[in-house]
Length: 285
Image 1 (cartoon, rainbow, N blue to C red):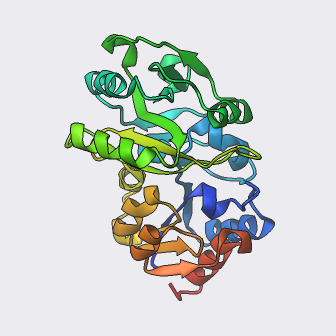
Image 2 (image 1 turned 45 degrees about the vertical axis):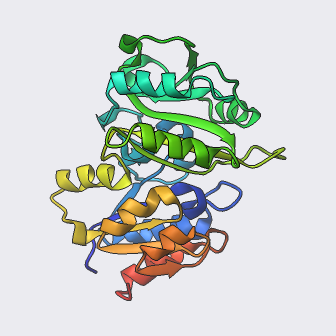
């Protein structure tokens, strides 16, 4: 086996469509760890949002959260490293987005500021956002007119809105803030019985993505990119799929993820993570 570090995305990858970790995937992760692989969850969720499912997986040490903006102890929530957006840029982003119909959501380093989400701007929270906050137990604060000094330790600026609107907002952000931020958008986790599909816009500091966070973990362990295997399915997995020594996309992945993968495993409803780990451990991938 050529790999020492295995990074696994959560939604659409490790988690089945019902949002759980299957016994087959749990068994495969245990086998990977027994074979000497360090297994690291690598997700767009924050720690508290992920902890409700990660507690099912024993023996995890560090996790990569908020799409690489935070590296956190899985068991305790203690942040080991984070990459914040410059507060002036956060202020400018909020000002740029404040008159959108949906609220601006600033995700912050909770150990420093005491909350995860700051609701700001003039827009309203979507039903989906309210459901997500309640479902995950997220700690939420509100400040509709923050000053620059109120915006320290912001890891992500986001917005949840109908899928028909988000691409245009993303284009405007990329045009206005070129070189100052990293931004992307994709389908959000839907509340039960959603009225319409919603997407999430995510904006980070320059250079921040899942590979950014994964590289920090690998450097601490003296592991090179060629010794890293990754499994993912979404647009926010592309950076790590491009850079890792072994890039695996789920069969249910978006086309952009599959285009940058060396291998495609089974879909998440068919325990694709377990299949990928089996291929790695037997030297096929």
